[in-house]
Length: 72
Image (cartoon, rainbow, N blue to C red; front, side, top):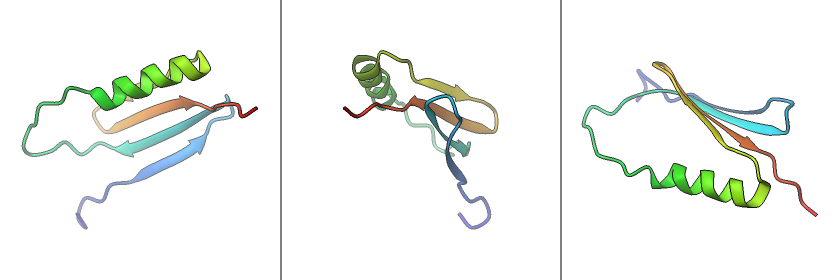
């Protein structure tokens, strides 16, 4: 909404990773999630790169750190 905009940040952190973060805005109605999207990201990055995806959720933000993939 205009009063509470979603702020998304995408940046490299110099550690061969890409960080995607946003301010956390919980929904007013709670819908149950199976978290399949995050599970798929974890599994695919592990298979392709052998490196882990990091997910950090705090009171005010949600951040995912993805390893950069090498292209041969």
